[in-house]
Image (cartoon, rainbow, N blue to C red; front, top):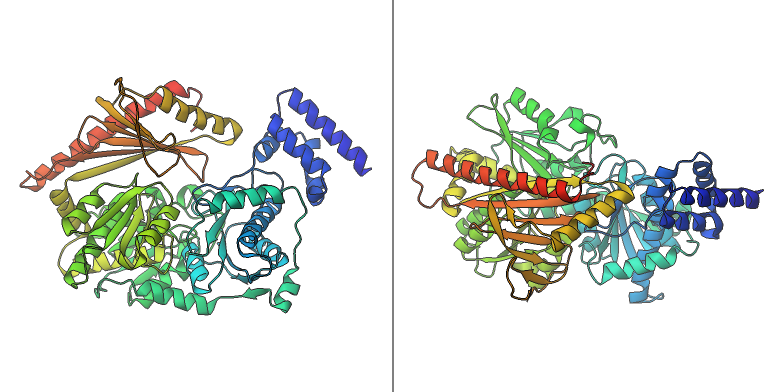
Length: 618
């Protein structure tokens, strides 16, 4: 009967492919799942989907193999499929990591891995699946049975001396998603050549059955060890040690956005001595649907997600709103615009938060006499150039030539020397001070921003005053972000088509300014449009990133596909000189000039996208 059912399903798949309802790549992967023994446990669900004619769902689930991006493996969950997260693809990921570590250390060597997870749907099941698989591969597994933050996992890898770590999370993605975030023994996310080595092992594993050890058996035998409080205490102590100010007079509304952040950000703020921390009750409990977050996408980059916390801050007269994303590795902040908390509030961009914290850390270290010329800060190629000006004015180093992804910042810290690392961030709201982790840390960021607010409050100043002072000193830097979302197989094709167009037929003008240079980090070449001169070599880093320099100082834009979401991102940068200004009205005019330039750039970029991808789905 099973053979007959399989034959019927294979025939239905063939017809769907011939009729154009299913791609060849999806059909190929589906046939494997129908006929090969490793996938037998999932066959009943697969047959049911085929009988119901769920071709769109099956095509999206099977048309490709979900790859590692800037944050590992992340995507939609679906019970079956190669391009989605389910127990089979999670098991393949865990066994691939295990096999790669074993190939490097040897099967007779002691091998260990620590596993944590957020509060998303299926995160507990996926984490336990990883534990069973790694124990089956001969590893000692340290498992957090309760939800924890991503930076805690990074810390735990180093603290426990493990060969690697796994974090089950999709960060700020929609409720439909989950992910497998893979860490090396450094506590940083895996980087080349380890990432490609792991992928190769995952591909090899996909051809065979994956042995597991039952949870109860692993715990009883000691191959699966449950961890918690001791690591938690050590992590919080390491975060509090990054304090740069004794100021504590700040009233804070904090929201974990239904994620795990209270155990990290909330605990760190309280342990550091901030007595007035009001955790937003409506978003306090972990909830995989993010029920009380506007739009149900808990992303602190999006201003409207902070609106409930801002309302609470108005009601209670707070000085500051801090929000962390569901796995508590990034923050968003909001501040009152005027002297009264009852009035208007504003949110800050990731670049503004990064520049503020960079300047504050530098200032505080200078006051303490602890700033040295060999100190350095780290950012990415698509983060605000204002940080370089801050570093240069302080006489310290600046490492700002990195691709998107905090794993590159972690790698640079290890290369350049952890002892001299001062501060690092990327524009997508990820920040780090200290060497207790090699990833962005919302707890450290929350502590530093709370100290910034409290320190300025003691001096009778506000964060917005401080930001304006930075603009007067360094110039007004403005940034904008365009996200174009393209779902599924056709969406992937649109993203690739748009990146190809940007390379082969780039815009000649954007925002009324000529494109004077194109830096292509995929082809490792720098080109001058309209010039007969051959391209000049562009050194590392290597990635699918294009940077277009425009004919105005400090003005450029960048384009890259996201490594973790089905979207292409455009990063816009502009700067207006302010050294000649003498009053606040002049600064307001400079801000308006920057904003207008960014707006004109955005309009032209949207027009260019529409001309190259006319049937876009945003």
